[in-house]
Image (tube, rainbow, N blue to C red; front, top):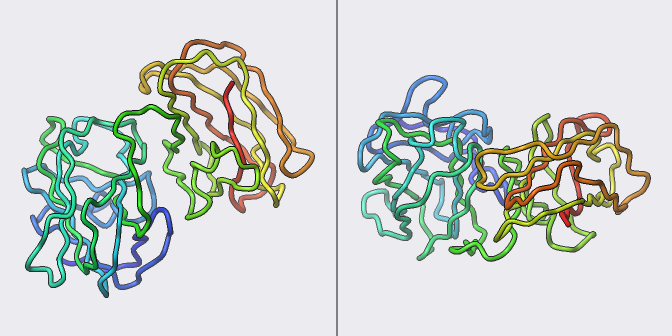
Length: 294
């Protein structure tokens, strides 16, 4: 059965396609609060869950052909063994004849609520985009929180040899104001996203580093969107985190202001995570220009 609704097709660009349809050609629609439309509701707190069988499929039907170059997954809240491991991506003009346009094999399980981006190897103008999941990580069930396609080109890092910034809570940000703007060393750019307590930012380093302080730079406008309270955690493996610092009732006195904070319990960590719990005021959204660990 087709599910027709307002589909946020692009996490990066956030353009809406009112007539987009999401289906599972393999019949793995899911049920109730874990049905397939939860994979496209822009809420990382929900998920699509189904019994797993090789070839389980997710399909996007657009009202008109569109040239899309990448896609992303937001991983679900629990049971890493249900995560996708190997899959192929296909495109079609008519929904009948499909061409393989991407493939991923043996992709490791990720952190809960992590967002990962994948490039489409052979992009084209297609009205149907289909993902066939060939393997998961061993469970008899399958789950994913969000699936989104984008017109942006993504160049994934195969071997992590540079620092990368992500949002485990799924607060990626819109095109031009993505989470990666926090480490671009440009105070004039920013990360902007809707806010709820627990919004998180995570830095993954190529190797463990003992950082003793970190710096936040306020964004260019709207002081009410500044962070006010947060805590910092460190991790060796990206799974077990230890709280190493916390700040409450912080005020930025000006725009593009840099503030440094000590790390109370420094250690050799490869992952640093900041979880924001409170804004300066209101709920108009969250923004920050730069986040740097030293």
